[in-house]
Image 1 (cartoon, rainbow, N blue to C red):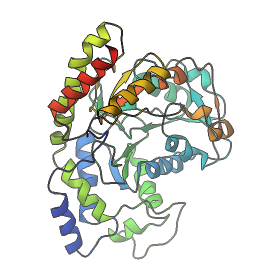
Image 2 (image 1 turned 60 degrees about the horizontal axis):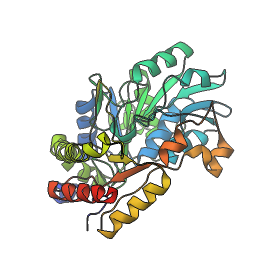
Image 3 (image 1 turned 90 degrees about the vertical axis):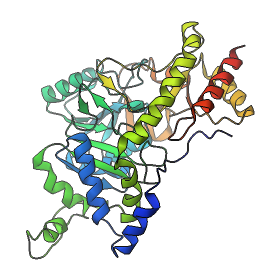
Length: 375
């Protein structure tokens, strides 16, 4: 059987977890947490990186830092995971969904400005599949209208846009280290803070609203409750697991890229014959092989392909149900403009297996079975 996903494991995870246990400090902000923060800053160039309990909690922190409040509007694509919206709904915001581009499945940057109203407070671009949104245009709109830009880069660790790491171009960037991501700690995430003025408050919010971080640095003689916050500190055990993978991030990155490139090479004839569509990587974008997907004719053909691959014990899955069509999406949001591509493209997309350790002969077998479907 070829599973759709296998969580990454490179070899030093158990060794580092044992070291964390022996350190007698397994709660947050121990040695491995600090190593992970520093490594992410090195990888991205962010002013500050802080490991969190999940990508969701990173988004929640960003919402607090951006000052989102009751009655604000936040612009984002409908084609995304529910956490992207929930983080802002929890602050009382209304979500304004914008259509996507069919080539990248990212928010259509040319439709954002039409969705801006006097109530708009933030834009949340989602870098789908580790392929960047058109950030130059989005940042320009944000600056013009005085809006925060919060990058949902859950799938974008070690991916770049015109030489800049995803998550470092807006005010805040949010990573996920869920078991389905390129680098994993089971459940976990990180927030990137890109403006020096936000660093101290980010530490306070992450520490349940206290200035505990300043206390441990010897900057205050006692710590106390000073702001809003929650418990966003990740366990040292999880950080030890993650550090084994980001210690040398190219080990996983290059392995995944080899599989991604083989998929593209072997399935290109089907694309050229108009049988399916393959991912597009725009100029200036360096992706991280987070996923490989194909687009079929419609939802019926996709369902038939899933059934066909299942016969050969190949795991394949569709992805998001657009949020604007969900009960909560209708309650907490609205769609700005016309849904030309979001629903149509979401019903065609099928994800194929891709993970660290997927063998090239397995990729070849999967491609043979995809081709067989069209015969």
